[in-house]
Figure 1: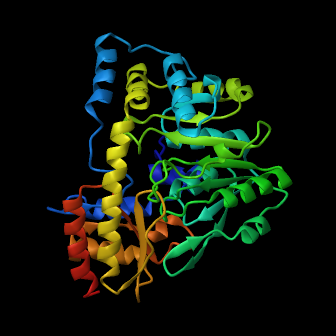
Figure 2 (figure 1 turned 180 degrees about the vertical axis):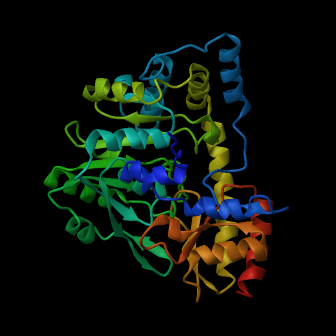
Length: 397
């Protein structure tokens, strides 16, 4: 008796649909197309060109040297949760309990855990778009349905129509995912807009999942962007997802946190246990150093981003081929090119003609299809060269 071993492709239909249908990243496609090009300036992903500062690396190295390589607290080591409380107290001017903070393996894991806590099959979560692609993907992979609400776009600037957002709320809506300052557009909610969003949460009994990861990167002289921390009450349905990646140049470390009501502690601990079983202690030691000693580095990062923002905005505007506005927050310039509606094709073309890597707006959902995202968290000389190349290429496309 003989039988044929099925190939991998024939088994794909046996996988769960939410796994089979997880979307491919349009950003990664362009990266794979151009990453080996000699001399290419990569501005396609959300990270800068500075390595993690030495004081953070050294704290992690000391922990490794001390042999801290064992299982640890699922919620995070007490020292890190205390450091998170101190950091928030400094930033928001109010007391925070360490029991509100839960250490995760990344901002992405924070998002996945929160989505899993509040939604599942049959539920809907509202996502204003253009948005970080992982929002929609996290909702879909979790079995729920993302409901995209495109932001309004005029003269290069995005605005959130609260009437459209409320119209998207149904009996199945469980949450709104609000990213401010926004990746990819730089849109930053005002305090009044956040108050209106919180009023919708209270009126309809739905959650706000607040991604304020870029909250330190604002360019109006303020120390930070407006935050839901400024207006929430204890009984409000607001959960924060966060990461160490951006402020402290720790993208490769894969560590983040959730801030949630203390009563959620056992639920979140269980979900961490059944996914990663905690974050490595030596990485957490580095994170403690980042929080306690990192303000000077954050200031350096913001100053570099502000100069990068100026170079990119002024240089692209001078082409007279693009629609854009200087972003209020985050460290991305989102822009569209007159007469070019296919951002995927244009991003690939600019790899060939400018040797510059940009993210296609198509990857960011409805409202972003015609745009391109450029990360300006890099040294000024790289950005000036990238803009010069783009100016030349855009004159010919």
